[in-house]
Length: 471
Image (cartoon, rainbow, N blue to C red; front, side, top):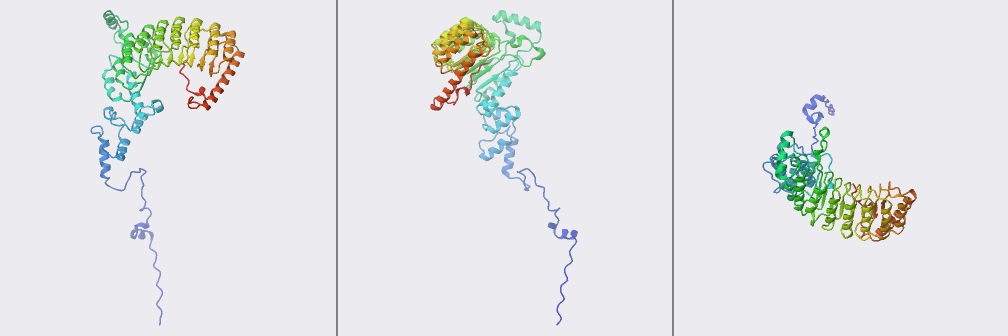
């Protein structure tokens, strides 16, 4: 019987014909372009939820819908809405920190949120209000620019730092002089034409304001420099004083580099007497003399002041004596800065006598005050008897060799001072070296004490704690 012939093998199809019969055989036709967008989908029609959310985002200004959404949907809306939306829409509706972080980083290059209690929303509204005040031009900018933003930001502003106040724009010098003379005859005020923004319209409305740092002057004026660009007028002072009196939450007030004289400082202090919250006052780099210092002395014992900075003023011996008299009766002040005045030995000795009875002051700065040997002699008694002072600065005085030896004698009995600055005080290398050795011993003693009683001394080394502001 004849066996069947073996089947002949099927001939292989050419690639082109195989691709027609089986599209999967063609790798080119099977390639896909995968989008890098994680939300890209092959679905032709988006989900209805996505369409609704996109509609809310596109129309958020006209119809802000947020609180009625589910948490995951709120997150999508907050991540995509514009940071340029009007504050009237977002201020009291959005509390999400990520949204306000986008607003801050999109507007300012440097954003240190730690200076604002780690709150991005607080940073935005404080800096936004500060920018408005910096560029407000009296008689040109409408007051509504400030007044309209107060209801939006008052709940979030705790600190204001305004380093510039612009004066009114000059139009016609002759006409201005005539108007100024008429105003002077009517009101008896000398400088009506250079008044700045009226702070009494703003500060009382900021119900949580705790720190106010102002400088009346113009930055980057260049060739347009004039002395009257840096005038803090009487009416500026009066409006600010009234505003401070109506701000019971204020804890820190700084008014530096503003040419504050005796009359203006006395007016401010008059409105700060018996203030319920003020603990820090900084009137440094002004022109306050003895009359103003006497008013400060009254304030020391009619307030809860803890820190007082009168650096770089014109206080002489009588003013220092008034402050010393108040210091001898005070039980709250812990830091006093009189650097760059001219209290001389008469004023320095008055301060020393006060320190012999004061039991609260821990930081004293008397650098650059024309002090010499008589003050050093009395200060040595302070070092021996006072057990509270920890930081002392007598730099840039004329203590002299004998004065240095007196201070060294006082330091031999002192166990509390951990910082004593005697640079450029002419005390001699030997005395300065031995005083520094005593300081090191006190620091080590303070460190060991802090290890034994961690609850009473929070920092392991008192010298490493934040030092008082000395500028």
